[in-house]
Amino acid sequence: MLVLVGVYALFGVIMVYSASSYNAKVLYGDEFYFFKKQLVGFLLGVIAMVGVGFFDYTKLYTVKWVKWVAYFIPIVLLVLVFVPGLGVTNYGATRWIGIGPITIQPSELAKYGYVVFCAAYVAQNPQRVKSFLGILPLLGAGLLICLLIILEPNMSVTMLVAGLMICMVFLSGTKWSNMLFLVVPCLIAVPALILAEPYRLLRLSAFLNPWASPQDEGYQLIQSLYALGNGGWFGVGLFGSRQKFRFLPFAESDFILAIIGEELGFVGIFILFLTVALIVYKGIQIASSCDNLFGNILCCGITLVFGLQTLLNALVVSGSIPPTGLPLPLISSGNTSLVITMLSMGILYSVSRHNGKEKNHMI
Image 1 (cartoon, rainbow, N blue to C red):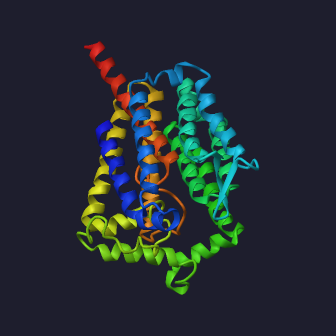
Image 2: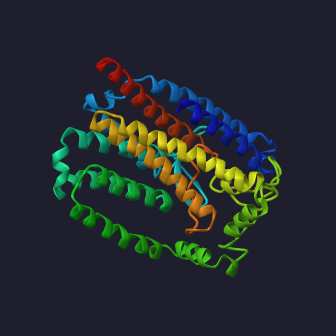
Image 3: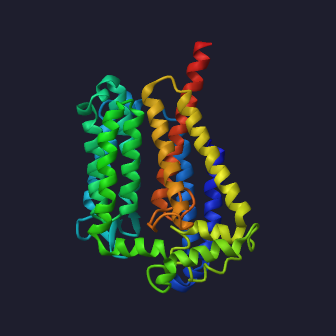
């Protein structure tokens, strides 16, 4: 697990350089600007992943206050985003906390904090989630995170957390009738959120027919499709992308998959998703071999975050769903996402080590 994730994230560092070198030189006079930031994030992520990997994950459950800390620290950080002087605004959204040269995106931490909270809550009393009243704390905790994130605004991560919330409630073993009460309001909320903001309607229109506004809302999707189409089967070669020359916005972050497709082609993207599938498979394998409910739900939640976010990013880049700002985990530029995701993979490894020790002890 550690080697697989490490190699995959290192590939992301290389692709960040390829996708950002020209843009970084134009904006900052240094073609390695984004590369150096991503490399620092990668090294910090490796330290976090290995360190947590050799930490006893059961302390997240046996120490009663840990689940509250894991949940409320991200909540406090999400609130601090709106404090003048701390919150950093880019492209009309305030999603980061700035402390000197360092920026932190609390929503990245909130996703995994919610997973820890849910796993601990369900494991303490598995029977209580059978009733609708029993799942209310899970719903309340998830909806509070969704509310704070949508106020930034960040609809893509809000929908990701909402999807994660539904999946975590399902994994808790609640009744199907309770799931129905949860899913229906969420389905109603999606069009309501789209109608609430005019720019979301424009994005939806651009998704339905991007060529109707090729210089405005449809521009990014069209450029992404040009990149993917230009890649063909085997790509134009590593570092050979043309769309990265400031044609494709956010080429090093949300749309880096399009650059990968252009440079490495369909075969390169196939290998990339094969690696993703292997990481998800390992996560499910570790969860299924875990002998306690907390570890099982914890691993499922971490794997869900990684798998769902990767899937949503791929759907956006390929024009299969309306465009939203969501990074490709372990690949896109962004240190907060990279470090937190690698740390979460360290927790998976910790669970796998604990399972092995228990089996050896039983033998």
